[in-house]
Image (cartoon, rainbow, N blue to C red; front, side, top):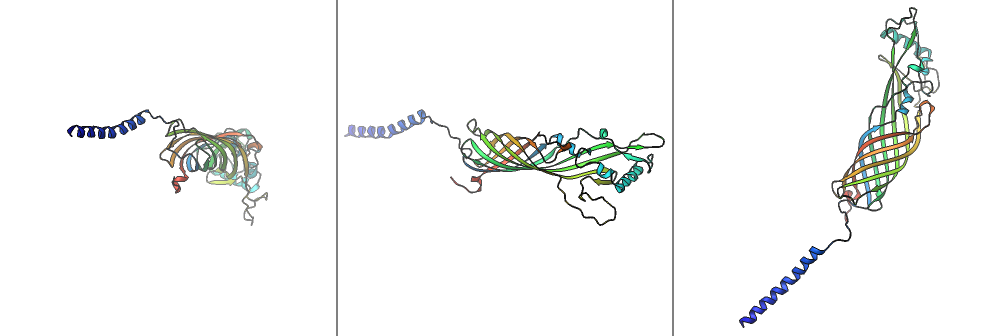
Length: 311
C-alpha cells in the first residue's frame, strides 16, 4: 500500500514536470524567422508640421539691387520729376554740404552686386501615405518670407567738386515664397527600432511674390513697385493704385534626408535637411536660371493611429 502511494506520487510529479521542461526547451531554442518592428506603424497616413531655417540662394536677391536690368529699378523714381525733387531735398537735409540744386544720380557700378537674403524661418506642413514598411508618397507645403537690404552711394555734381561725404541710399526688399513638393519617400526601418533614416525625392511647384521694394533715405521712402500701373505720379492728384503682382510661378526638383526619431507608435520627431534646385517667378536681371536653395527643419509627425485608429 505504501509502495503504491509512492509510485502514484512519482507519476503525478513526472506528469507535472515534463510539460514544463518541454515548454522551457521551446523557449530557449525558438528563434523568430523574421524580425518585425512594432515601434512605428508601417501603413497608413502620416501628418506633420515643422519649422526651421531657410537659406535662399543669393542669385535671386539681385532682383532687389535697383539695377536698370531689373523690371523694378531706381530709374522708376529718379525719372519722376516730383520724386526726384524729394530726393534732392532729402539729400540736402541729411548732407548740408550738398546743395539742393545739385544734380543727384546713381551709377550701376555703385550698386550692390553681391546681395544676400537674410536667414529666415520656414514653416512646413505635409501628409504622407505609406504603402508599407519602407515606401511612401508625400505632399508638403512650405512657406517663408525673405528679406534683403542693400546700400549705394549717390553721386552729385557740385560747383566745388568736393565729395567728402557721399549721400547713402538704402534699398529694402521683402519676398513671399511658397513651395509645394510632391515626393516619393523611402524609410530605412530595419536598421534600428527608434532611429530610422529616410530620404525623399520629388518635383517642386512654387510661387514667389515681391511684397516690398523701396528706396530709403532718412525717414523718407519711395516704392519701386509701380502701384499706378504705368501712370506718372503727380502729388495731390486723384490716382488709382493697383496691387500688381511682381513675381509668379516656378518649378524644380526637391529632395530631403533626415532621421525619424520614434517617440511612440504614433508620434515621431524628424530632423530633416531640405534642398531644391528650382526656378522662381522672381527673375533677377531677367534671368530664368535654376539655383540651389536649402533649409533645415524639425518635423513633428503623427500617423493616423494618433487620430483614432485602433489595431
